[in-house]
Length: 301
Image (tube, rainbow, N blue to C red; front, top):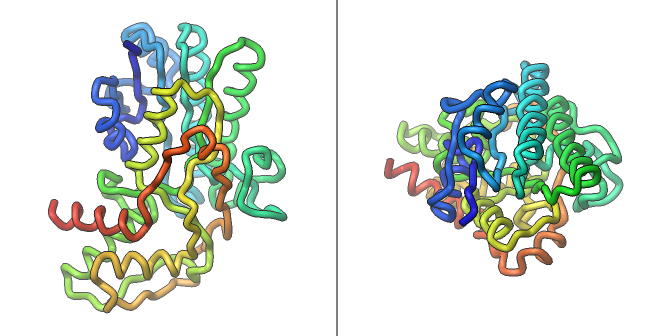
């Protein structure tokens, strides 16, 4: 049986992945410092995995990214570089890196974005350091395969959400933070919620359970190709907020947009043809369904 090690195992995706891979080893920052070479070496020597799912990352919202660009770049580059380097040196058979659609160019001539478009422009300014740090891991994995004959790969997920996300709104994913904001407004008898920007950016969102399903399929079927992972639904932030209000039975709440705050990247929806070819039975839940499930779980905590 494959010995699977998952970094970032206490995060949103790690928590859902446990329902598919209950026997894997889930590690968090409390176990090893993945930005430390010595610590990463110790991790591989102690656990000797033959499969690694690298979920760990320094993540945050727009404001956090803009205020701490150096930290986002350095921490992500360090951990990604060390994880891949010592996976190869310890003869890890399968390494799956998890990137983000914010690695894609800020503006393209055509959408949805395909995997070959990765290096056709700079990432958006609001996630510039994080985007480049994640893009570097794609380059490293591709180079490792080319030079050393490994079969490592990566997936590029759209924005994720789900209960089990971080409690800090500045670090949780947008939809999870939105659901929490709605829940708090209803609980406190408020009449409105306020969101950053003007509501026009377009986004794809995927429930973390559906992303965990994809990761499990990649491991189970030994898929070695790299591809985007997303739901096909594309909505504006305003539409997403309206869907969320309806799913949370809170359509009475007014949505205010704080236009003094940044919108972030206007558009980054991705093509999932490669995903559907590799995993034909991928059938993610709708945004409405996923938000409703997440809201009910948060409400009942």
